[in-house]
Amino acid sequence: MAVRVQEADFDPGAELEALTAGDTGIGAVVSFTGLVRGTGITEMTLEHYPGMTEKALAEIEAQAHARWPLQGAIIIHRVGPLAPGARIVFVATASRHRKAAFEAAEYIMDFLKTRAPFWKKEAAIDGTARWVEARDTDDSAAERWK
Image 1: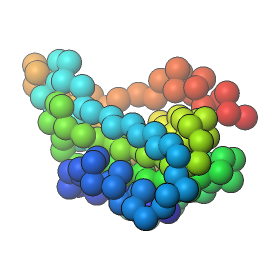
Image 2: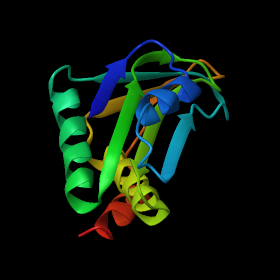
Image 3: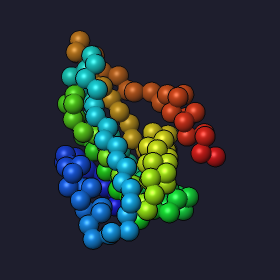
Image 4: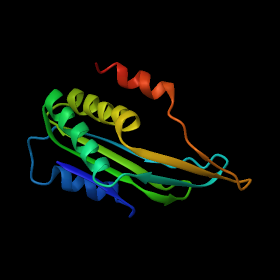
């Protein structure tokens, strides 16, 4: 189990190497790397509630392990100010078979978007700032797992 909330950037390749190191029973690894979109913004700042956020991510990961036969999973989410193009989130799942790895990665991302306590604020090119609202499409995506 690997869950991290951090300001520092991460290396997806190194994270995948760590996930699979020494486990020849893994037949599939699925990863997702989310980036800060730069459309109309100069920066995105992510805030979180320390302790609560890590606990929520660990619960999401544990639920994925309970639903699919995973060999491992990683969730990394960055906080603080991030420039357009910066890596913001990394999710990787490993399993003996691809279906479990794909579904678990998608499940984790759907619940990160709806249940993890993060707050995003965008600084626009025109100098204004706004908090990013939750989207109905994220809630709909998470609903399918019930």
